[in-house]
Length: 311
Image (tube, rainbow, N blue to C red; front, side, top):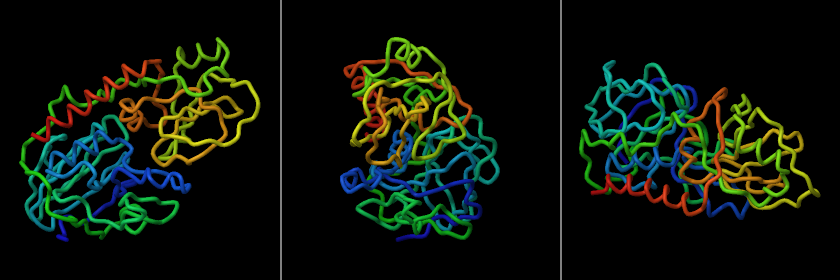
């Protein structure tokens, strides 16, 4: 391993994340992993890594990092003011850092999360096959916790692909984080909503409440009533839209519980989860019903965007 970056200031909440541990769901372990998997994957490809390599996921306020050795980095995700040695630098682009260069952030314009990739992938503790940080369990990542001042970020290996400074993802291929309309398909319990409830779900504007984290977002807005008998607990996925007894829906995110008994009236399609990952408390969000065929088409388009960085 090669020491690449020293943490001067960790920012608000910066953790190590990869694509998570979905294989452990059957054992009751949340899948975890990057909230914005498109941004995570793009950052890795921009520095020549496999998409499964670990990155730093930064929340709202990014860290201040100093290069301990020459390295290639990329920052993707939320619209923030990326600075290298106090000068503006491009996001969604490979950037070469010399020893002593400082990477930090200025004003956050919109969005919630940035991903920082380093050539070779971020080295971290592995737990159940993943480097992702599970803070509740205190496992994975940087000793099971967010980054702290004085931590050193090392590369786990040589990068698997060519690293080219200045390579970028074309702006038209990036997610439109300003569009807060999320595509959904009907969940297994959609029929528990009456006509007014379905109209409220698909025709109302909700707001992300203060009760929002990597596990899920409670949404303020129209009250949804899901009729029917109490349910036995069943398996859950990220993107599931639950309706608890109080009627305020909950959108499950990366660290969601593996099973639950609240009705799931809809599921946010995978291509919209990158947008969901960038929501902050107070943001408006709407739901638009789509088809599985349309959802798969958009997912193919996102994969093609990432594939453009492989050539």
